[in-house]
Length: 144
Image (cartoon, rainbow, N blue to C red; front, side, top):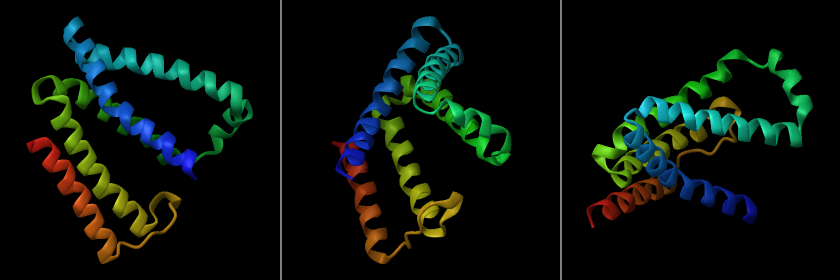
């Protein structure tokens, strides 16, 4: 379990780095959309390589997967396009603050209602207070 937490911590560290790098690329070339496209090409090549190395048979199952699950691709495109476009004017920290706040709200709802086959985790008062404390902490770090 500790290695999973470490991997997710590193993924979290990567989100603002991704935002800063891609926003800088968008500014450098004059197009957030082209910068996002380049990011997706590199991400696709990386993910495809890992998929082929770890589980190439899974590709055959794509045809039978529920089509609504592919909406995740639209969501990641929305995230990358919006952070690439907005971070240069709002600041990476402020942009990621709102992303994190949205993640806290969405994750709590997904867990509480066990959406998308998630492990059910009811939103108790204690958990809600913890999420509020996290949100407050993120807010305070942006004001300091």
